[in-house]
Image 1 (cartoon, rainbow, N blue to C red):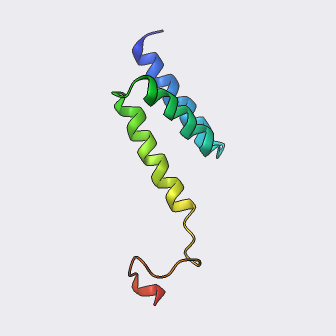
Image 2: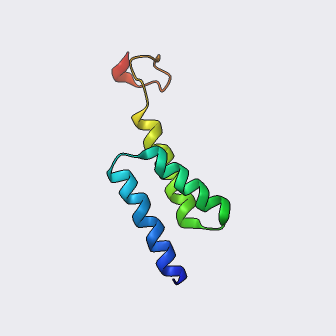
Length: 74
């Protein structure tokens, strides 16, 4: 299996986890890839994007005060 095939394979696998809303598995899989090869820019980029998505999805706007100074929450 060539390097290009390996990169495409992990991207497809991560995308499948995301489509199935298995975000924890996607993070764990990406973490293993990054631990094995910390220079893998695609994996690092996907991990950052996934963390932002999870941060947004898990945000509890009703449980927090207006920390972002959004005018529509005042």
